[in-house]
Amino acid sequence: NCGATLIHISSDYVYDIEKKGPLLESDICSPKSVYAKSKFQGEEVIKELLHEHIIIRTSWLYSTFGNNFVKTMIHLGKSKDELSIVADQIGAPTYARDLARALCEISSTIVNAEEKEEFFGTFNFSNEGAISWYDFAEAIFKLEGIHIKLNKISTSKYNAPAQRPLWSVMSKNKIKTTFNLETHHWLDGLRRMLIALKN
Image (cartoon, rainbow, N blue to C red; front, side, top):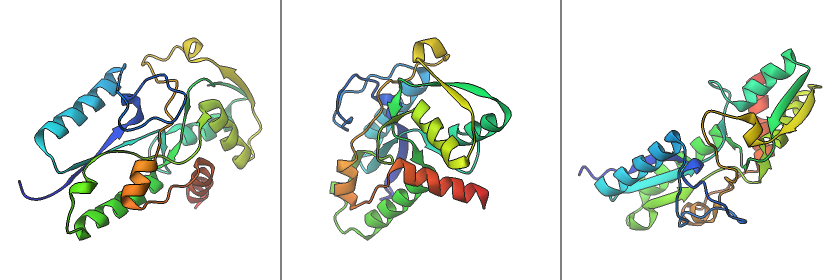
């Protein structure tokens, strides 16, 4: 052991349970898809091998880089007249820059702490709020001034190859309290991402 702390990024998909309130780190996980199961198995291996770990479960990531939902919607919105978007999966979109900032703050806290024990464990992190993919697409088009006909579709009718949770809204109380973190609303994150994308 070199004394280092491992910070591992996991997924909201590990939960996949029916719940009326925000998902807690202590909730039982029930991963369904191959992706979700691999994420959960990764968490379990880390817990077994290294006590000094921080696992962060995040959701619906997007940024100015790579392929993601926001950039795909902008592209499709400019090339199509009509789209059908899933409306029964509820979660919290997370701007990757906000996650990166949180990771930097967490790392700084760990490095400067004399007693690190209280910082180890599993934490949820996402932007605030709860919306569907349909709501998210609608907000993207509105902010971008794109006029397109949107249709709501169910997960079952969308018929995606991989199973996805219908409820992915996570509580951030633990990470906010432990690391004194500030979390931003998903709409604020989206606005900042779209500005960065233009620049």
